[in-house]
Length: 596
Image 1 (cartoon, rainbow, N blue to C red):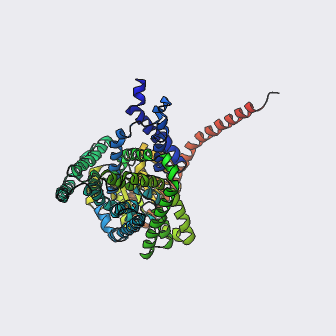
Image 2: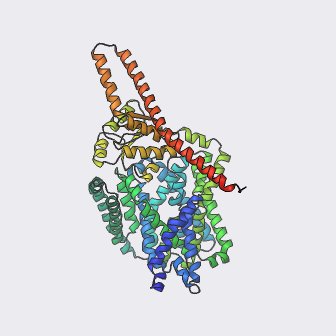
Image 3: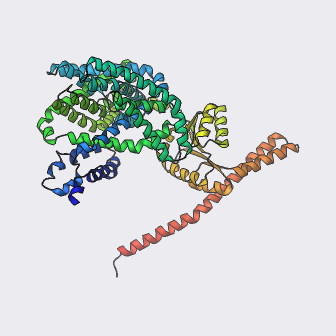
C-alpha cells in the first residue's frame, strides 16, 4: 500500500494541494504572481526536477507528480474555466461600447505583431506555415496576468482589456485553424463549419431563453453549492456541445461566459467559480512547468534569451506605437506596451494544438513553450518597469487618470430602506450601485430601472470586486444586526477613510455600530419618534421652520448621546486590555531581571 500511494493519484493530489495551500500563499506574501509559483512548482516536481530522482530516492514520490497525463484532464478543465471567466468579461454590451478599441487597436496589434514575429522567424529558416502559426501564438498576451495587474478601469487597464478581448475572440478561429485545419480535408472543414454554426446558434438561443430562469431558481435556494453546481453544469454542457461537432470545447465555455455576462448573475457566478478556476488553472500551469527541461534550458539558454527579448521588443513597440497613434498619453502607451509584451498562457494552448496536428514540429513547440513560461514569470517585472517608464516619460499621467474618476455610493440591501436611499441619490444626481441577495427583489428593481447587482455581501470576494476604495460612501440597510456589525468591522479596517452609514434597530444597536466603526448610525425607533413629533407640532399650529430646526437639534443631541454611550461601553474593554497588557509587560520584565 505504501508503494501504491507513492505513485498514485493521492500523491499527485498532495503535491497540487500543497502548492495551492502552502507555496502559492508564500508567493502572494512576497507579492509574486501565483502564476509564476505554479510554473516553478511544475519545474521542481516534474521529470527534469525532483521527479528524475525518484528511482534513487523513493520517498520523493510524495513530492513529485508521477503521471502528468493523469492530470491533463484537470489542466484542460482549468483552461475551460479560464475562457469561461474571459466570457464573463465579454458581454455584448461591453463589446459594442468598446468596438472601436477592440476591433481597431486590438485587431491591428494582433495582426501586426504576428506579421513581424512570423516574418522574422521565416527569415531564420521556418516554413511559411510554421512561421504563421508561431507568429499568431506568440503575439498573444496574458489575460490571466495582465488584467489582475492593470484592472479594467484605469486607462492602461482599458487599453489592455480592448486588445485582450480581441485576442480572446481570435483564439477561437485560431484554435480551429491550428487544431482542425491542419488535420482535416476541405470537405471536413465545411462540415465542421456548418455543424458548428448550428450549435453556436442553438447555444445563444437556449442561453437567452433559459439561463435567467435556471439561475433564478438556483439563487432562490440561497445555497452557494447549488449556484456553483449550476454554473459548472452550464460551462460543461456548452463545452461538450461545441466539442461534439469538432470545435474546441473552450469555445463553448467562452459562449457560456458571454451569455451569463448579459444577466444580473455574472458577478456572483464569477465569485463562486473563482476557487475552482484558480486551482484548475494552477494544475494547467504546473503541467507547463513540468514540460520545461532544466538540461535543455542550460544548453540553449542564449537562444532562449535572445528569442524572448526579440518577442518582448516587437510586442512592446507595436502595442505602444499603436496606442500613441490612436491618441493615448505617452505614459499610458509605454506602460501598456511593456505590460502586454510577454507571451500568454493561450500561447501555450495554441502551441500544444499546433504540435498535436503537426502544424509545427514538437521540438519547436518545446522551445517556444520554454520561452513562453519564462516570459510569464517576468510579466510582473515588466509591469513594474512599465509603471517606472510611464512616470518618467509622463509624470502627470497618474494624476490625470485619478482625477477623472467619480466615486459612487454603494448600497448593501435593497428593501424599502435601500430603495428610498437610491431614490434620494437619483434625485440629487449621485451615482450609486445597490447589491442584494434576494433575486426576486433584484429582478423587480432592475425592471424598475434601478442600478442593482445580485450578490451575497457576506462574501469577501464580492466586496473586493466592488472597489470600495474609490467609492464615496457605503450604506448598510440590511435588517441583520450581526451581519451589519461584522461587515462594519471588516470594512473599517480595510477602508479607514470610507464613510459608512448604517441602519440600526434602536439606540442600543446604534451604539454598538458606532463602536464597530460606522460614520453614522440611524436608529429606526428614534427616527420614527422624531417624525411623529414633527407631525404633532405642525398639526397643532407651530411654524414649520422652528419645528424643523428643533427636530434637527434634537437628532444631533440624541446622536451625541448614543456616541457617548458607545465610547463608555468600549472603555471598560479598553481598560481591561490595557491592564492585561500592563501585567504581561511587568511579568516579562520580572522574567528578564536576574535574581538578587
